[in-house]
Image (cartoon, rainbow over all chains, first blue to last red):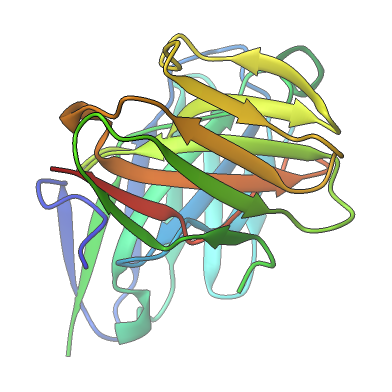
Length: 115
Length: 111
């Protein structure tokens, strides 16, 4: 059944195009950021992470960009595929040792890939 | 499959009943987390364990909620006297660094 929200911001993208998902984080002291993908009926699945001493990190078909000046995080997906359709969440970790690696999640963005 | 197992996947209960969920983390991970997710929202932190010690509890975790990790391996989350507002997806995650791996969750419906 549906376990991820129906009233989320939605990004519709044509199959094969690139997707950009944006996230504004809340705490300037956060030093670790992570993107998760969540499909219906499943838990969040790790995509990519980045530390605050970096501004860009690349994975397989995904790139995360971090702009600490404006507290903005983005996820770029290259050549979007139907299997990329899901809800995407960004999360931040204020301080691993002080906060026990507790992640704070932002609101999600639904990505719909059109064939 | 992340290696984090949760049971049951779905639970339907009547208001006022008690429910218990189980989480089996990735075996080498010493940290275990419980989160709650409602429709349209990101997961919200409830509590976490370092081995068998419960180190932090969110204010979201009312007195009706209790979590245990008796041997530092699996964990249980119990909700007593369930209310309709407890209906949500309860997610478990484990990790030994900043990266957390989530299970598929237990979807609770309180009628």
